[in-house]
Length: 211
Image (cartoon, rainbow, N blue to C red; front, side, top):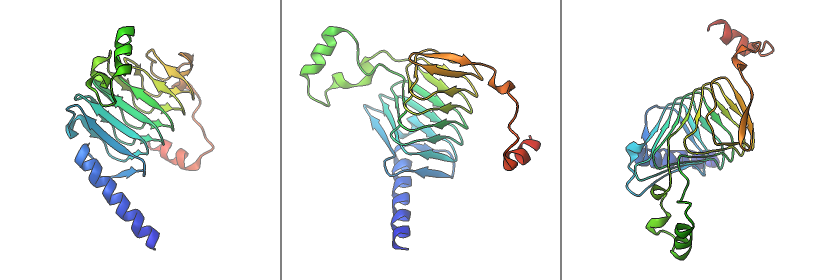
């Protein structure tokens, strides 16, 4: 009973923190103990929009007004991180596994003189901010599964109903209904929506009849 009270207090504190640092556009949320939202360099709560029935066990990080949009019925696993200085959009019904990294920027400029300069500056200096790096929006379509240890780079659009295999590094866009794998990720299977519908799950079978 005592443990249940402690967990209830923790959940309420998490909800309060997320309401302070983001916009919750639903009513059902689950935030893990390590889940957090970070707003830096002028970002405001309105830059992070979260849909209903959302589970987060990782981090949402916005800098310089970077937008993060999370649709309904999205689940994000432990140690996963989403970073935005421009725009990252994750549409509904997506599951993002543990240790996934999604970013719309290169973190820092790649010119050798700039990297040399950064190495001499203390942590927290303006040169460490993502706004100085190349950045392009990331879009993840509806009903996608992103496997463990996947990295999704700037400028990538992943279509609806896609699967990204574990340990993949996605540098190019992925069309609807595809499976991508590897480093860099390549399409290994398409038209997965044309596969036979599973019949072994009774609950799914009942749901499928209503579609």
